[in-house]
Length: 289
Image 1 (cartoon, rainbow, N blue to C red):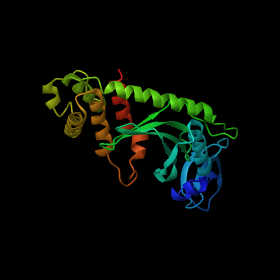
Image 2 (tube, helix red, strand yellow; image 1 turned 180 degrees about the vertical axis):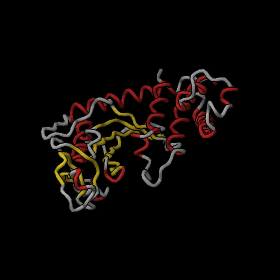
Image 3 (cartoon, rainbow, N blue to C red; image 1 turned 90 degrees about the vertical axis):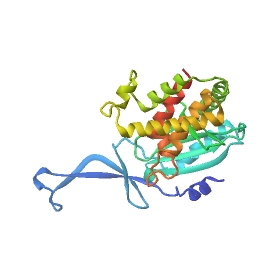
């Protein structure tokens, strides 16, 4: 697909603009016809629906969707010309833009992807990482290549696509090797208890009496724990009592049990930026410890 075709098919063929924000002088007392002055800040506004996506300073350089998608295409091309465009989405009304490309080399039980995220609200710079989708259960796991590796919005932006491509290629290989290792590692009941404690942020040293006390652990949290244990039981039954099955128990929970259909119908934003992402990262760190 061409750049224009991707923008049109993904409903990203709109632009943003930086507009000055004004504040009312104190003596006007909220009189709409009173004196107003420039605040020194700017709003990042969608041109199509005039929605303000974020607030920035004068130095901030807005980035258009066309530039974000084009940069993602450059990164994918730098890895391999065989990478195919998979999807692009406007997250949270367009505050962030997500672009994903599929690797031509899928594994037997999961597909591999790279992704690029940038913001129209000024919250992040160009960020990137890899993801996989387990074929049997549609569990998705998104891992940023590095939290510190983002490109800030300035006029002199230079994404260095070759360097980013090298990072992503290395991460893809590393994750494949890790998954192969996780599939061979058996788990104990204690491992299940440990990961549930970590993911649900339960007290590290809690006994059954304390757990049953609603003052220590709320009923709402207990319901979440029960649901997570169900997901872990399901995935370890299907994939074996291994670290791979344990990890998928958590990702099944975050993918299929945590939902916000109004704001995030595709479930991508939660897996990138919300508590679901944090849970997945905790689980990934645990099985790699």
